[in-house]
Amino acid sequence: MIDRLAVDTNAVVDYLRLDREYPPQLDEAKEVLLPLTVIGELFYGASRSDRPEHHRSGTLELSNAGHR
Image (cartoon, rainbow, N blue to C red):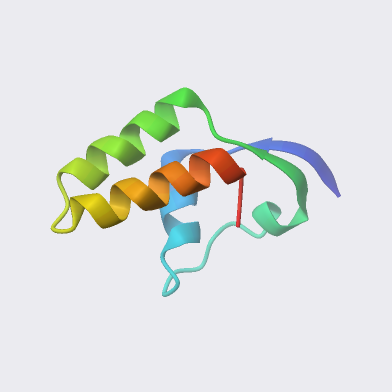
């Protein structure tokens, strides 16, 4: 079991997209840490997407919860 795991943006995007495999360590971690840079990149990506409000709200929810 992993106590704390800091993730990168690619791991988070893979985790959020149900059609992709994500790193299995995310399920093993007791605590998942989202670096500020990752949160910023997610908000930037959301602002450039075809559904910015949807993706922004998902990023807010994720950043407040820690993980699924």
